[in-house]
Length: 226
Image 1 (cartoon, rainbow, N blue to C red):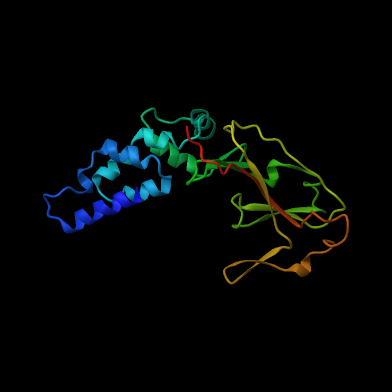
Image 2 (image 1 turned 180 degrees about the horizontal axis):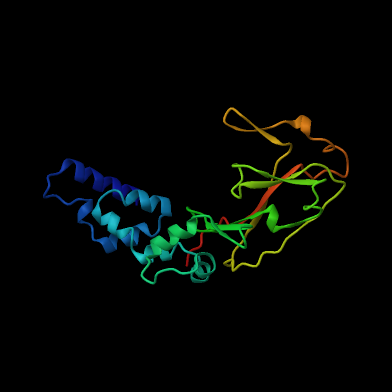
């Protein structure tokens, strides 16, 4: 496909206005081609000319990028959506981080793959002693998508439990935990952690624990295509 596009570009650049060019391609033909591309590539090609721009709004192009149960996700995440809203607009809205469950969770679609991603804040989990100020503090920060993190001062042990009730599409998912050792300070325009503030990390059975807890993330790297 890349060679075909290159040939078309050459004809367009070196030929007269009466010669065939990319703008002469039928929108349906362009849409049938670009539906096999990733969303970022579709948006880039939409800037070529009117034919590509119009084809990039075709519903069947974006419906192939949406999760199979996107109707349920729209109702769960966005609530009310106008009936005449196009599939590209739906995809765009679902790609934005959408907050639910009292602000403790955020969910969005991966822009390139259409996979469902979810982030859970520390307030959305059951953590031992989380409400006891002797052990935990909630610190505001711009480095967290929830604008707050749970900072562990000291503790002998703790457990983390959580439940997620969400209509995830069928697929393979990965779970990631975002942890940070030490309390961050600002330096050179970014957060810097001082390892001197970390104590007991190398003493068993402390292995696996940390001094800062922010979020856990669920996501699927697979492309949802029907």
